[in-house]
Length: 408
Ligand SMILES: Cc1cc2nc3c(=O)[nH]c(=O)nc-3n(C[C@H](O)[C@H](O)[C@H](O)COP(=O)(O)OP(=O)(O)OC[C@H]3O[C@@H](n4cnc5c(N)ncnc54)[C@H](O)[C@@H]3O)c2cc1C
Image: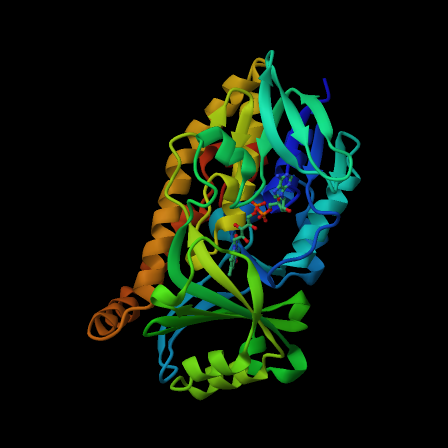
């Protein structure tokens, strides 16, 4: 049989292919698109993701273009008052916190997969359906050369609109939950940005029914800028596709904000808008030797910047389960799903809550700001330990060194 099939060559699918190859499995990746187009602009890669990327041999390739922010600076939108500073240190979790261009991450994963003899990459033909066949699966392939293929197992990393997930759970075509929020994204060239925006830190500005995130990427050549806006009932459900968006709409929405935020928004050369959606946690992630991974399993709102990071964690835990199994792929996939369900459900729920907290208006926002500014550096940092400290199965796969400073 032709090894394990992976549907989708996004961040999740490529990470899964590399992780499975690293534990001795043969993998074929079936990507529906003819070529990978980098969607989005910047991605924050927290230590739980970087630890795995290091083990996959991708981190070194990423480093020259990555920026390692020294802190997260949280400011109030209307007057730029500093609410908190959260230091980001590589030693706390044994891996760095990096921000990168999504295109750089995709290229590094793709180059590594293309160089791996155990991985075959097939573009322009997606997996539209599967059927159990003995202990393995038979795939129905689409694209210009439709047909079927046999595989030992199938990892469905085909994104938030996963066709394989719909077949597995028997759910409707679109069961995503709208958030009522959209993300407007732009890349501001360094020459158009002020020094404040080019400093090596991640910036978060909080306002009523909106927030702003920005950080330098591509070695400081650009500032990745994301404006998240509440759109209430005008935000259509179900979508996460991007579309061009008018600068005036963002500028109008942030008109009352502090000058540095407004100037950065005005410097944006163009915007694309994402309607943000997630889905309630699934009860079922596997069907025999078929397993869901990444956004196909657990799409989440981006307010903890964890969608890609959790897909990368999935890949590590999947490979750890496969390596530790006696060859029964269905059993290994169930072990993987059991290990991942609770953690990813928690990240999904916390991401949704985080958005609500960010967008509070007075008087609740006054209380939030007070708590944040009084919490103190150590307690602020410790609030992220549950997220950034990789779970045991991720550490086992990555074989990473224990953190120099044990998270407390
Ligand atoms: C505004 C915004 C900001 C974000 N910021 C961050 C961040 O800072 N940090 C972070 O960790 N995450 C972030 N995310 C989330 C992250 O982008 C996603 O969670 C992540 O890209 C999901 O990866 P994936 O591989 O599971 O899915 P996708 O990236 O959607 O990849 C799915 C792939 O499958 C292919 N495909 C689809 N159907 C089929 C089929 N039937 N057969 C074969 N192939 C198929 C698609 O063409 C695609 O290549 C953000 C998301 C948004 C919207």
